[in-house]
Amino acid sequence: MAFWSDKEYHLDRMDLGALSAAYFQYYAIAAYILVAIASGAAAIHGVLTGAALIIPVLAAMFATFFVYPLVWYVLHRFILHSRWMWKSKLTAGTWKRIHYDHHSDPNNLKVLFGALYTTLPTVALASMPVGYLLAGWTGALAALATGVVQTCIYEYFHCIQHLGYAPKWGWVREIKRFHMSHHFHNENGNYGITNLWWDQLLGTFYDGAAARPRSATVFNLGYDEAVAVKYPHVAKLTPNWPYNTNPVSRKREEAARAQADEARAGA
Image (cartoon, rainbow, N blue to C red; front, side, top):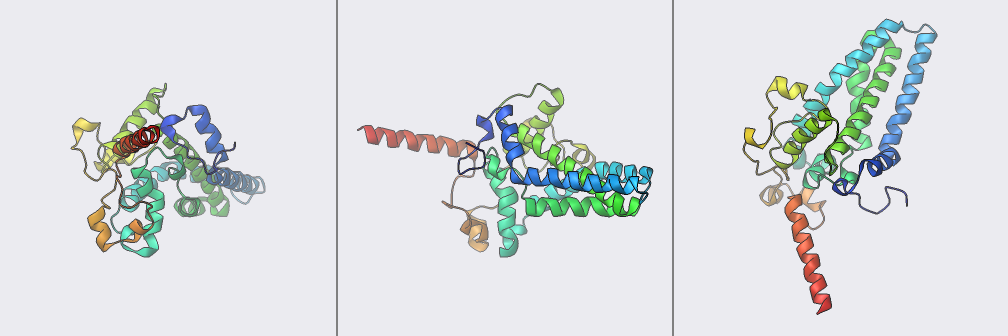
């Protein structure tokens, strides 16, 4: 059976092979790859036909490479972890889709990937103006291709961080450890995914549970029953609301209910 049917996919029950199969079948990843190929080919054509010089185009690509982590740091810290998006009906659904669901169910592959309709425009806005300033439209397309490839890499390693295994590569083990702290200990730090440059520079990096107190909002990002009374938009979009947003406790509760159901059925 192909991936992305009605079946659920949980990274803590998958291996790297299953993840890779799912990754390349996901519609957003396929779209990113197509955009990268098309924009990259257009940029190469621009260089070959003299529309832009190779050095400024390469500069546009390098600039995107270094700007990208800052853009996603800012988005993760100030948008995805904001407390204003749930207040408006216009933004509550987007916030729920792109981050609330991920923190309350961090191993659910279907809510791990960023939404295509939010991610691709963001990558374009973050990369193309820089490329255009350096090398015109050819530079803008080269920058877009660079940003989209970085997005694909970012998404893949983000998935790996949620797999239920210890990666063999030391660097991947480290970023997994920091990201798991962000998800299961304190969400107010370690915003980087594939690197922690900006966390270290801006003071939001922390090295494990001993470095910071446990956050009471690590799984619900501050959106609880009290908040839902005043701002009900996310609650209305959430099945079985209110529910336990702690994924570990929720799994135990579900297992206990299933065991009780089996006992009643066998009685």
